[in-house]
Length: 385
Image (spheres, rainbow, N blue to C red):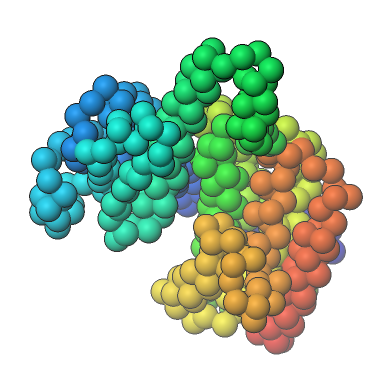
């Protein structure tokens, strides 16, 4: 049995290494995709095109505008005189955000009254609008708190010591101190790149495995294998082990590129990373093998692979939180191996979580992978029989 299996492995490896296109396809596209997707998948909004309607034109309003400019998030490209001119700017998509500073800003601040500043946003891109609104709101609130502290210091200087202490206690509020763990700077790339590693590994292993048996059938070599004493289990192992080795090579290449090119923190265990990758390769290779058994041509195999990929990506939590999905969809995602693998990679990369804390994800991969492999193996036995 061992000799037959080794012969099958040798045949598959020679065939893979002999094919120049497959050699390039196995390692160049994953690295290229990681670099492209790593730069594209970034929710950190920069250079927000902004218009400012400053009807106050006072030192206070100019200080607020300068604070917005120096934040680094906004490009102040237009300063219209009236709010009515903003409609044309939004219609031509020249601005994403408009800030309206009323004429009575300084007067209200001087008398201790509340001043209203209006933010107008282009909601066509809801994600960018939410981020821009968050940035601008934070800057304006900080500006208001600084002015409040200045007025409090002046007020304390004019009052007696005891009275000033009472005023300070009266105006004292809650000081919110936030601390972010695992991704202190809230860099979205640190969140996306581990998911991109999972996506690329899924695409490459599925594509290569799903066309393996189909290629044998189209080349006419499947009939030659049928007359050999090769058993179905040996045939399955001979078809999957070479692609598993290629998958490990791709995972290593992508891991190194993510850590050293994008500076993604990797605080977990490398051994745990490869164990989790091996469990996921069992799932993806089994699914690719199953697709290969139900397809007659390589074109059919490729089409079926893409039909699986898009729902798998949407229901994996890569972009959209699973907790925000309808409850029936949340139950459906439990059948998606990519969901578990993405969670594993993010926790290994950013948190350094040990296996005991991620046992639900490991259990999911351990249950789904062998189930798919059993179905694929039964179909292979039927075809070889």
